Amino acid sequence: MKYTESHEWITCEGDIATVGITDHAQKELGDIVYVELPVEGHPVKIGDEVIVLESTKAAVDFYTPLTGEITAINTSLREFPEKVNATAQSDGWLFKIKLTNPQELDLLMDEKAYYSYIKNL
Image (tube, rainbow, N blue to C red; front, side, top):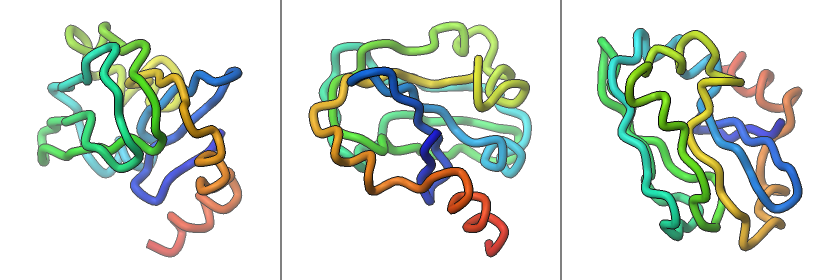
């Protein structure tokens, strides 16, 4: 898994990356009550806003950590947004992206670096 400073996690299988929010992020947000998902087939550039998560505390924008095309979205989150809280780093994934610039993965943190980062917040 790779991580961003804005608390997204990324796993890759070939040129397809799965993106979600970290367990740390979901705990900070509180109970997720709504997820606005991106559109499949939509091209995105690193840093584009792609998701809005609404919780009992706030509404938060999340940005794509990689450049590519959205190939899948976790449609189950429309009916069960609480999956983000229950399984943030597995079944609560948000979207999948076909990478157009795999070198961007090198910009992301590994697990050790991420947990060191959140310790210092």
